[in-house]
Length: 366
Image (tube, rainbow, N blue to C red):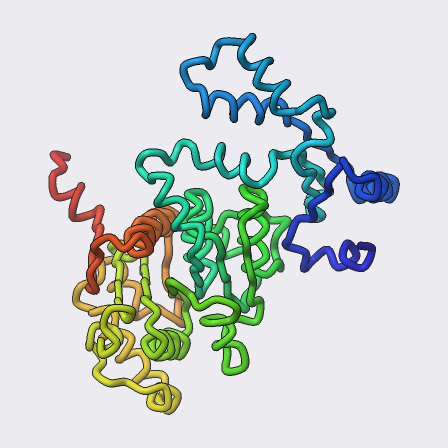
């Protein structure tokens, strides 16, 4: 435990304790004495009340029925010995929550019936991989909030810079923290029972197979990274393994869906770059690479402001412009598409736009 706490910069998983076990009680007290636990949050009865209302919505105001439910729920055990105590080392905080089954039941209650219980159970068996945790942070958080899978695999080699704070959920005290760790921590603060695996070095030749396969093959890859080589290689590998790919680019909310699970002969990027190989990509000079990238995004269909930005990349602009409003919108669109795909509902390969400028401004009277 001491070694784990000492490596606080890289900690991203919470630690579970059970106060019905004397050993866990002692360990918690040791952490308090060592000033590793500074804050304790215990709203357990409030969560039990929420559970009661979820199961008995017509009795929400009936205190007598709730007290009877509470007695049955606790089985005469002290409330502090029920559920789980979850320690978040990066926050020096201990939180008392319901056990896994009850926690998930309450946390997903407001999904119903937009997501049925059978659908929620199916989603819990799915594994989603996300490449790129700038745009991907909003995707991962939205999927996690809906509990749109049982496991997330997150890959990004980069750490947080000040210029990221126009679109990433983070604060100035997070500067220098790996983006995968930031995303994993926030997700675990929402739901410590979700499973998350991180790849803080990004994906490369030595770990690509582990990312896509590992203990369980990805049911879906969401690619939202900046690396051109990774964009190509992830699709070639996913196609060989029958893993569908979703990409969201923010500009005009462009969403790409490539159903390699349904069509193993599908050309990557909808055939916009032909039968491009990884070797060809690696041999390209910067100008040729940019030319192919423009084919992939279909440059003529970019927004006017993005077109205006392209000549300034590497000159007056550090990198591609991205806005929080567009990134967050992309997180919602990607989550919606992911849910449809993983629930085996109709979702065809193709390129789609949710262009707010076109949808809203075209009808504006101002």
